[in-house]
Structure formats: structure tokens, C-alpha cells
Length: 296
Image 1 (tube, one colour):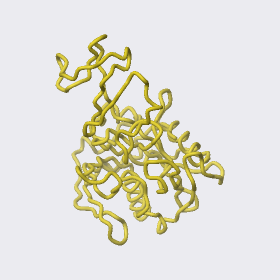
Image 2 (image 1 turned 30 degrees about the horizontal axis):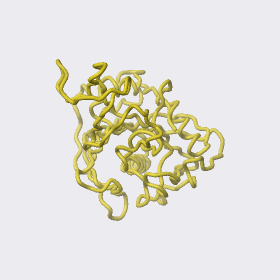
Image 3 (image 1 turned 45 degrees about the vertical axis):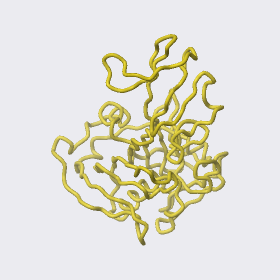
Image 4 (image 1 turned 120 degrees about the horizontal axis):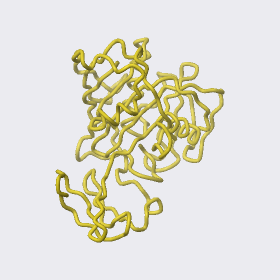
């Protein structure tokens, strides 16, 4: 379900462009570009041979935005994890986009919630061992696979978003790079052996604590089939992409950007923040704005 990357300086020679768009459900592509302007020269070029993963964690972690019902958060289910995937010594309760942790993950002792000395945010502090539990965003990685001018999508066989279409993607595991995770996720969900071509998009979803890294990839062999979490895998021509049956806002954004690039005749690297509208249904994949969109 996920794997890592490196951006070459040459892919960013055109510099970054910033714009913002909001989705709509009319005909054609489900978004409208609102404005566009060049950014300052300091953002016009990424460092040569820099790692996207290093860049995102060191400089962009506050900006960017996974979906797995069997572990962690998901766009459609921010709490997400089943009890079997959590330690028995840890109990969590949803509080907006933050989890209230009632028991220490190390010793099982009850926690108190207050601001530790020298910090600014309320944390869960164990009343027995004194350790602090920190909550950090989840990294989701996946592949946008191109084959015969079509893209490979998987129909979800699990919740959330059962029966809807998505790119093969999932949570990155400890011990693997973003590109390795993306390749693994693709194999697990579509039994497809792929080769990473280039990074395509990094999307932050701060409200649910997720960051997506999506790679352009190609099939090593023209073979794919549904994995355990998919009921169907299919190649879609651009005009046939099921925009009204996609599983997540992140997939809607990624595929819209892909179609836009294909029609422009040039692939770019995209960065942006998906801001979900408070109070809207988690299943409403159009209830967001894409802010701070950078493309190189």
C-alpha cells in the first residue's frame, strides 16, 4: 500500500505557481481555477536532488495532507482504527480532529490533559510514569498508474467508502520509504508490479491529520487484479474516470490535477492543502477547498 522518492532539480525549472480552486459538481472537470500568480524567487526552484520526504517533514509538515479501515485515520473516518488494531492499554476518544487519550500507551496508567512546561498545546500526560503522548499526522502514499493513456483505479471492498473508486494507496509503514510504501500498497490493492516514474502530488489534510504523497508510476507487466481490499480494478480513459464515484477528496484533487496536466501536455509536481468544510458529511468528497496550491 505505499513507497519513497527523490525530486530532481530539473523537474522544477519552471518555478512554482500558486492558485486556489474550489470543487463543483457541474459538467466537465469538478473544479474551477480561481486565481494564479507567480511566487517569489525563493520558491521558484526546489533544491537539486532533494528528497521530497525530507522536504515535507522538515519544511512542509505543517501544510500537507489515507484511508485504511484496518488502521489509523481515514478521510471518511478520522478516528478509524478498530479496537483490534490498538493496544489494549490505550483508549482514545474523538475530540474534533484530535484524539483524547485516556490511558498511557507505555504503562497503561490514566492520563491527565494539560499543557506541559515549555509547550503550548494540551497533551496527554501519564499520571503514573509521567510520559507524554504526542499525536502526529499520518503519511499516506500511493500510485497514479498510467498505462495505454489510461489510469488504474481500484474499487474499495472495505469501509470507509465501500464500493467507491480510488487510487491504490495507504499508510506508510515504519522502516520503508514513501516510494517503497506506494509500491507495496499498489501490489496489495491491485496485485500490480509498478515502477515509480516521478513524484506527482503532496496533499495535506490538516483537519484529519493526514498527508498524501502520490507518485506517477507505470506497470512493469500489463497485469493487475483485485487484492484483498479491492473488489475490482480497472483502467479508465480520462473521459471515463468516475469522478462522481470516487472514495475521497484527496483522490478527486489528484485526478483533477492529473487530467489538467495531461491536457496541458506537461506533468508538474503539485502541493496543496485540502481544507475540509466543518460540519459537512465525511462522505461529501466535494466539501473542501484546495488552498496554497503550488505547482512546479
